[in-house]
Image (tube, rainbow over all chains, first blue to last red; front, side, top):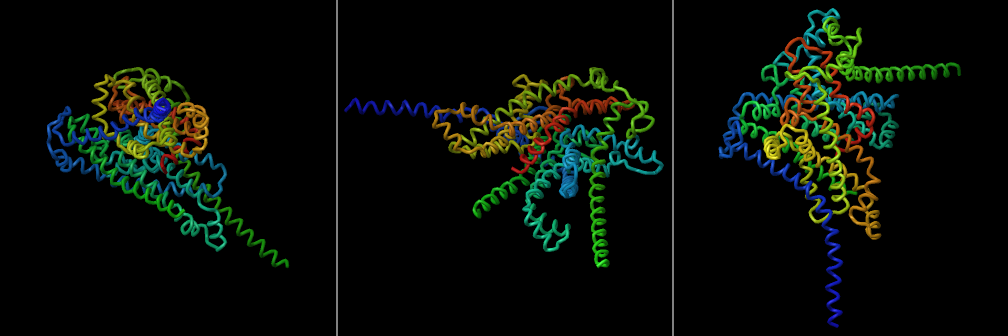
Length: 311
Length: 298
């Protein structure tokens, strides 16, 4: 009896030992990535947040300076230009690339021949870096060598197209190039959406005698409305993080006319030795992203729940 | 009868004319846009083969009248960037030795993480997954000073290894997201059956998950390769001179043209920097687009 009793507790740990090892392996496997991500997301963010409240200048320093850096940031004219540019750029860039992307998607959706070829052409800019795009477009904008020189050479001798050397209009050069680079991306997402529309819906509209334009406006586009929002949110993210494109295209100039928040962070941290204020600017970038992404993510989760509830 | 036939003919003719014009408009618009997209690429390709004298004479945007390969050779091995005259070859190789390991490591980690987070869920694993996802949205700027400190402590400043580390850590959230969302679609019954047969964690991974993974691994590899190759911020902040990846070197190259700009060599240099991701795009376009739409919508 007592021997029998003993045998049970011995047998159970033997099995549960293997089980426990088995259940611990996945956690062990995940642990390094989790630790790295945790450090990256939370420790690094907290660190920069602290730097933004510190008296760091040329080197990180950890004396507490309260909101001094933020005060000085928001009273800086250059920062003012940077976020004004960001708003201007975001607006035109998002509307522009969505309009071009949607037009291209609708054109391709008309059962055109060689669909794959068209798509490949419109999407290739996305494979190359903003550095490459920015460099090449800076040549095209160059009044002495690029588009202006070409048109003048054709005989229109007072044609003027010198966006990048005009501080009031250089931001439009950034916008045009940004739209050129990423309208293919919008096209790809819209096309995927158009293809997912229920063909019966479209057929029903056509039988009712609706024209093509009306069918798109009243039937197809409303059903892909969530894609508009998704594209807009992704584009805003790109816009807030814009750095490479400007670095290669205008380097923030002429003067400081095309400064962006990301350029400002880089300049303050690594060119001017104002680490504290640079960190404050980086925190503002994060805040801008959060303002866009947190409500959007909550909305996506809410919509999924609602759909699951209905289904 | 004849009148009716005529009316039908006329109507059919009108319809086919309308059809012709609408087709004409569609293809016309597509052609215009295709030209806008292709011309910048053509300009660079042409100029990399034209003589600089001809570019100076006929302008940047012009059909080539001369042909030579020398600009490519100069861009690769002899052109001067900020006083060092070794062309782009070192930077190209830096990019390659940075991108390949970082892509492989981050993809493998993503596959294993995705496997755990979809098939070996434990209490709190969904929360952990959500936390990892935050990495996708973080702007690189917020991590610059901490990374500079960490890389300094590890002795990895100005080195390709440092950039590999940065890109792996930054990439894990993307690769985990991609793989996890794909593995969720693999039936749990497959895993259960294997466990009943006595297969363990790794056996199931190698024998069941991996053979089903090529589509998502290709998507992830293409996404990571393109993203890391094209990255600029970390490259320009954490390395300098000969240790820089090609994106940073391209900016330095075009900035250093204080005298007459040699568009021929710069065009070749730009193409050298753009070629690897372009080739991947041309040969793996389907997967590239799939990664794009998946990464975007999920």
